[in-house]
Picture (spheres, helix red, strand yellow):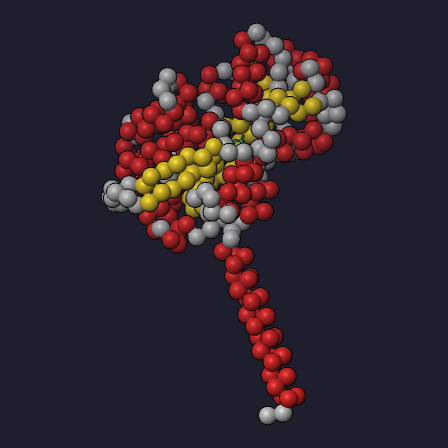
Length: 301
Ligand code: PBE
């Protein structure tokens, strides 16, 4: 064999190896995608800008498009929640869309926003907050969504469960439970209210609520039986009432009726999705879609 043929052969081998590498790499990219594993709530979730009902009657304001005229009554503030929450990005869009130039969106947390809302409510002050449903607070206070004629906050959404890449293919038991782990809207509202009204630790209250709903529990676990040592599951969540409710109830079910060891990890929303994507977190039950968490799903799914 002359040296020219050997060289051509070597070049061909290099080309084949590079092509194989490209194929493998492409495969890896797919394997790094987070996966939808269930629907916690099918439709019925919504979000927007909310005021106490007395604000609607007293200022005669019903729509976000009228907010700018009354900016000073609101101290030029919209009380928001944590940075990275989908509702914060949607509210920045609303500020641009409805020309709310006099307003600042205040970054805080759900707990701080609720404290501000309740304190304003109790002293009959004007306030506007970012808020959503399902949430227990709407059942306890007389609150109104300002109309959103341009649908900046979309219409209704679903709350979905997502997993790290590969969880369902590795563990058919968790895959089956997650595909069953769904609430009707009145059930989900009932869970959140029960937790909010309870003096007990949220984990205990969520467990009590599950025990009081045996038919729902059975619909989640089906004929899966308890088996000790099924493994460890880390559920990521943000400190939002809805996420704490669904995650604590799921932890109770997986530990008490299935045999997993479950850790709940409370995080910032961006870190939660990143952790899901790199496998540090196994599951989340708080993906609001198609709109609120679209930015994270576009990045990681
Ligand atoms: N929320 C509640 C979240 C999703 C769950 C509406 C505050 C958000 O805005 O990202």
